[in-house]
Image (cartoon, rainbow, N blue to C red; front, side, top):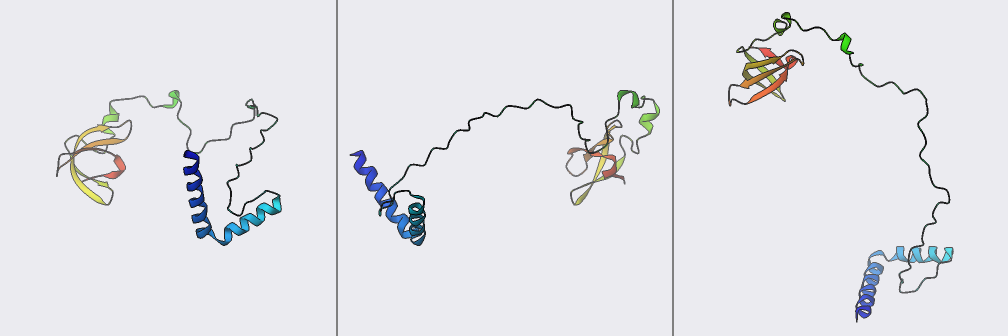
Length: 145
């Protein structure tokens, strides 16, 4: 019973394909005949040929001692090159805690108050005056009001 159902489904599908594709099916049958593949007038399903497995297996190559290409951008500073923290660093910031500033984000400019300053990273934590949301912005995006 299941074989009857499968053959009926295949017949319906083959009929719909021939209606939809029409000329392309004829061309595919001609190509199959040229290649020597037997074809039926009802477009029987031919199982796909199995691909031959490669005789040699690929081996992972050992990394060679070739020079590594240079990376883009600035190289990171060594620990010896980092500046020593001092008391003057806190005053190096262009902003002070509690200062009223405005910052740019997207297409807008928002008035806000400075809550904290991170001079190592170069960012300022701000509290927006309109809704109290806290955001962290770089010095370049913040202007004194």
